[in-house]
Amino acid sequence: MGTENQTWLSEFILLGVSSDKGTQIFLFVLFLTMYLMTVLGNTLIVILIQLDTQLHTPMYFFLTNLNLVDVSYATSIVPQMLAHFLEEQKTIPYVSCAAQLFFSLGLGGIEFLLLTVMAYDRYVAVCNPLHYSAIMHAGLCVRLVAASWVSGSLNSLMQTVVTFQLPMCTNNVIDHISCEILALVRLACVDTSSNEVAIMASSIILLMTPFLLVLLSYIKIISTILKIQSTEGRKKAFQTCASHLTVVSLCYGMTIFTYIQPHSTPNILQEKLISLFYALLMPMLNPLIYSVRNKEVKGAWQKLFGQFYELKSKLPSS
Image (cartoon, rainbow, N blue to C red; front, side, top):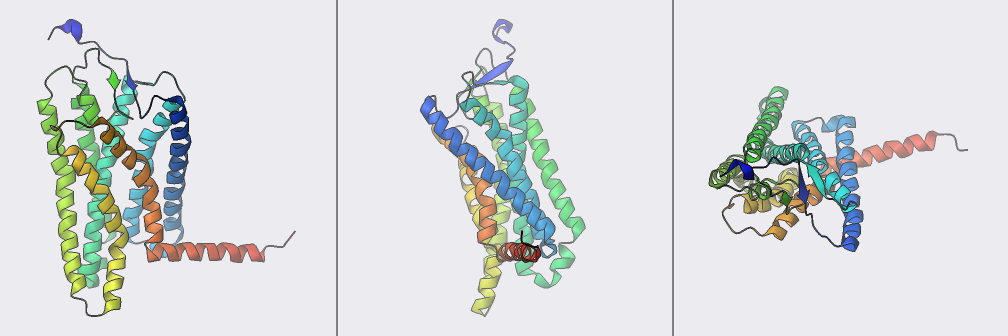
C-alpha cells in the first residue's frame, strides 16, 4: 500500500446510538440516570462492606473489587457517550480513543477473572467448609485479585497496541458507542486476519477458560448441595452462591456470543446494544442483585439503618 494513503489520524468520529436529536435527549436523560444509579449503588456497597466487620471476608473482598471494576468500566465509556449526546461534533481524540479501548477492554477482562475467583471462593465455601479459612487466607485472596488485575491489564495493553498499529488510512468514522476493538479493527485498510485470530485467542484465554473453570466449580457445588440431607441445609448452601451465579449467568453469555466469532458478519446494532448492556445495565444491576439476593448484605443494610434510626432518636428534637 502506498504511504500516501496511510494518513495519521488525530481524532475519530463516534456515530453512537442515534442521530435523531429528540432520541438523543431522551437517551441522555435515561443513560445519565442509570450511570448515577451505578455509581451510587456500587459505592454504597463498597462503603457498607468497609463499615460492617461481619462482611470482612474473602467473598466481600472480591465483591469490593468487582464493584470498583463496574464503576470504572462504566466511567470509561458512559461520560464520553453522554457528552456526545449534547454535541454536534461527536469526535474523540486519537489518544483518548486508545485510552478508552485500553481501560474498557482491561476492566472487562478483569471482571471475568474476578468472577472466576469468586466461583472458586464459593466452591471452597460449599465443598470444603471446614478448611475454608485455612485455604482462603488473606495472602491468597490478595494474590488472586492482583493476578486478575495484572492479567486483564496486560492483555488489554497488548490488544490496544496491536489494534492501533493498524493503518486506518483516512477512515476515522467508528460506527459504535465507544472505541470498541472490533469496530476499530473494521476501520483498517489492510488484511486483519491476524488481529481477528489474536482477538479469538484472547477471548479463549480470558473468557472461555474462566467460563469453563466457573462451570466446573458450579458442577462441583451443585453435586455437593444435592448430597446435603436436610432441605434447610441445601437452601442455605444455595443461598451462598445465588447472587454470584446470577451475575455470572448474565455476564458471560453475551460476551462469549460477541467475541468468539469475529469472522461472522457483524450486526452493528446488536454490538451496540450488547456494549450498552455491559456499560450501563450490568454495573447497575450487580449491587442490586447482591443487595436483594444476599442474606448477609440485606442483614448489614438492616443493621446500618437500625443504627442510623437509633442515633437519630437520641438526638434532641428542635
